[in-house]
Image (cartoon, rainbow, N blue to C red):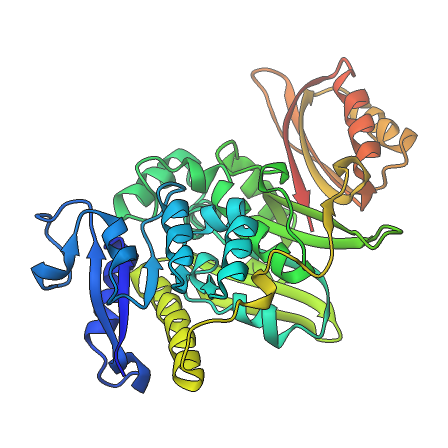
Amino acid sequence: MTIGIGLLGLGTVGAGVAEILLTPQGRHPLVGQLALKRVAVRDLNRPRPVELPAEILCTDPQQVVNDPAVDIVVEVMGGLEPARSLILAAIAAGKPVVTANKAVIARYGEEIAAAAAEQGVYVLIEAAVGGGIPIIEPLKQSLGGNRIQRVSGIINGTTNYILSRMADEGAAYGDVLADAQRLGYAEADPAADVEGGDAADKIAILSGLAYGGAIERSAIPTEGINRLDACDVNYAAQLGYVVKLVATAQCLGSDADGTVQLDVRVSPTLLPKDHPLAGVHGVNNAILVEGDPVGRVMFYGPGAGAGPTASAVVADILNIAGIREATGNGGGLDPLLAANRWRPCRLVDQGQTLNRNYLRLQTGDQAGVIGRIGSCFGDEGVSIRSIVQFEASSERNDAEIVVITHEVQEDNFRRALASITALPDVKAVAACLRTL
């Protein structure tokens, strides 16, 4: 039985999917039953890394959705629109959908799930998070019997490459970003990566799967690495830490009505050098799941690129194909993408969260300044793990003081920081980062 595949997009990932489907030798036997029937592209005359029959190419993606020979629609075009509308149109036509589009799922996942539930079709999203790392299915199935306490990860390869280079070479952020763009690791407009938006899309999806309820994507506190100074990476190393862009979703308990309270965020974070995520370098991704009773489980591998992401897309296609072969249809919604999640979730007030903090202050090189800073922290009940004065600027008679706190409520830390900022000897808060 041949299963017709319609492909929306033939960029890096789409070409990778096509390559797998066109070379089934040595792969799972079901791959040989998958046939590309229609492919939507922007430009019919553009050179492509894969050779496809001209008759299956089109520039109108709606033709892919409407083609009766297409049994499964694969969306790898990216962006919010028309991708969202095309996914919904495919569902309305009763066709299962495989997508790698984390931006659409993070923002419109509930709408898409509701439509899929009504039509009784699958929408699978393994490639939307972590590239070739299998994390979606494990969260839905393998770890389903656990109480998930925290999901944290390095889920953007561009920023991890930049931070790895900054740590290894002491290079400036701007210089490494330019190299990443030349190498194709970063887009010409890198904002989604370096400002944390891409990671926020992904942690929104993972938190929904881990805790069973949707959260508002736009409400996730998000800070990228675009304002990170190389000296903070250097100071962190001297103090036994590495700096990574970490996306985290942590369960802080439940309200009386059963609503799960979540702390979900993306931020540059200091990790102790023995932390499992600290050794993730280059463009690799890793996701650490902490649960009861499983303990700590980490998923590691390439988080982007044609091969890894296409591998995840085809895995989802095969999942649907296997169901069709076993049952004779592709119906039945994935229950953990359903609109009726199994419990409500909400983001907590960030002021009530507990955090460890790294703070770099530019101060006058005056006797007693460290004591006055310590007093401001003590007045708000903030316990200091370490406080270090680094080499002062002899030209301006300045000092740089780096403080790492123990775990403290965020409101207390912010009040202490306001008092510190008001001290005459404190010239600037140069950096404030999270610490694990």
